[in-house]
Length: 308
Image (cartoon, rainbow, N blue to C red; front, top):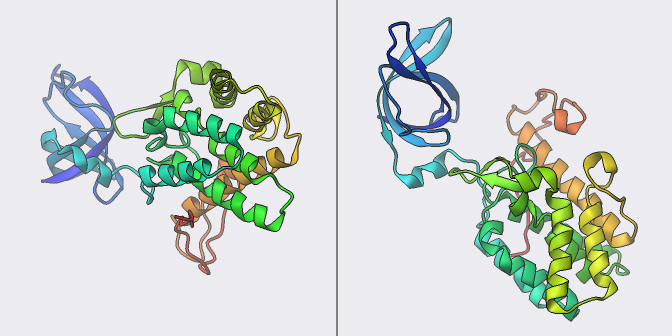
């Protein structure tokens, strides 16, 4: 017996009209395999992202390995952790660390707005991925991405003391908060697609709406509300990347730059970790279709210092 995760599943019929399952499964070795379950009526028992316990034989079909699954049954729920890419950092602990930074703010208005939005969305923020397919598209990726930017922002403020630290940290924490509105997550905890609101509004606009709604609820009407909204709306940098406006003050520009930098670092680490030292990756369309070189002089593992 072995465990596998169903990546794709289709119910089909053979030439005799018997039902069978045509699958793509991810094995414990993290490789994908085509598989068949012959003479099987699914009746909704299994679906994509299910982890299953299987007994199988290995066949060769048209020169490729294929599994013939003889028995299949649901696996214990906690087995999904073995197959789903997840952050190495506990989302609850990362969230608590960020909230403690906010609660230490001297600016009472920024503290009230940010802490309120965080706590209202806490449950999903602690576990959500940060993307569908690109950077930090892992369970807990949203908190990892957010905390990475906050840590880089802290260091930037040490180099440039004229930066308003609390404004920058506030924007960093809120810039992707509406990803919890934008994305659907399935039983795997990964993004399975976009919500209707995600498609029609998106996380930049909805994030600004969160700020506006929260400020009104708290009775805050200062210019800092508009500054926060601008940071969220402009953090993708350019109209072709989804921002309705370009960054128009220092902290907004820094946030946009750090967001892009963290995403790029994650993409490069992920891509180069899949090839041996001295080899090039395939072309990475998310990075201007570049091949990347693993020079072997540093770790390709994505580790960050979250200041915990």
